[in-house]
Length: 219
Image (cartoon, rainbow, N blue to C red; front, top):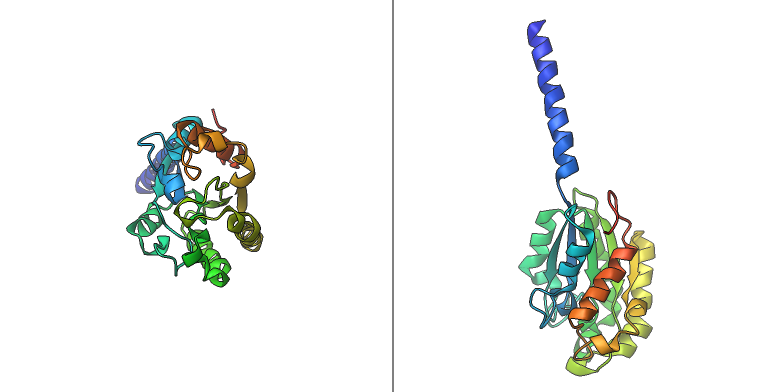
């Protein structure tokens, strides 16, 4: 009987400590994307860093952005082939924010546009299969205020965005409309493609307002 009581007490204590740890462990937020997420030219003043400040210590935001990367597997620099793609899966985030598509609009990438939908569907499925069953947010790419680097705003607006919306509906995931949210921010896109420090803060604030946060609200 004493042994039974000891086992019961041990399990109860373990359950209590597990519950306390679960309450204290920050919610993992992964920002997956291209140079806009990475923060090209911004140093530590990226949108994920600003998002971390907005959400506070109840969340851990990690930046998995990589410059020049595409969603298309056939793109010149596909995100699929990067170590970061494996690293973000291993981290098992509870919230995933995907911001890809800008580099796909380049002529040499968009020539394979017929695969954009199927590749995006598969990309989302990778994250849906994670043990954490994360909330997933697909960002509609922000406007391109310049045609630098071959990026084409008309392709983003007229072709990519409708496909991304369709993927979100099919996969039952959320959409964050950065195209709408940043369309009046041209002054804060220093080269017409990448947000400056102010633009990154505005982007983070816009994203934070769209998140359906499981345990806390933005500070």
